[in-house]
Length: 238
Image (cartoon, rainbow, N blue to C red; front, side, top):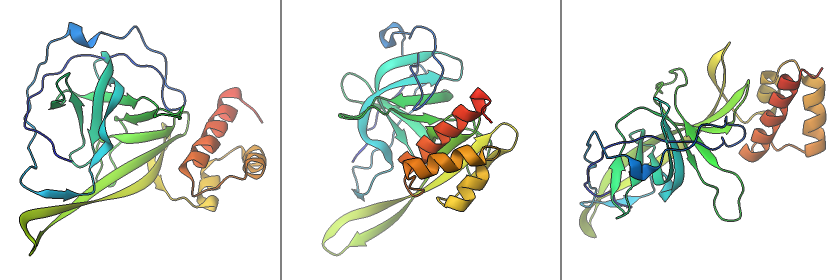
């Protein structure tokens, strides 16, 4: 995977719906209605061989993007640079550009044979080396939001078989929960820890876990559990 050297200028956006329950927004602003602003160069790694990836998804995918100023764009091909924590997108010629204005969220359309959209959102409190500008993947959003953070590192090495340097990327994934009262905190895929996090609805949650045979190592199952828990909170179920 290689990024070309190019320049960017940014516009505005309109959003659909979060991975689970993002709010509906106003009519999207057509991308063609805006000129690019705020140029930023993207360094080309054409001088090295790369193993692994620091992009999500690995190839630009159709997305909806919302800026911090409320403007939205739809039907842009975009990627999240998890190494440098920035949003990249492509123009009609396939050139990659880097956004240099604050991003609220980016929502990637569902892949083939999948109905789940993937949302990356910023604006959460700083923690563990992450900042308010860090892109978190939103697994479930509600009174208690389930997030996934990515931390990418790399190691450069040389090979006697080639004069081209080799850069290997490694990605570490971590889960966090966020609520307005307690802020953000890291959690593990541990049944006891997660159940202790879902306070106030012990009986209902236990029934759900039993009936759905929840796998606490599965992010899909955990997202479903958090969706259910947030529904209980919003409905005032006892």
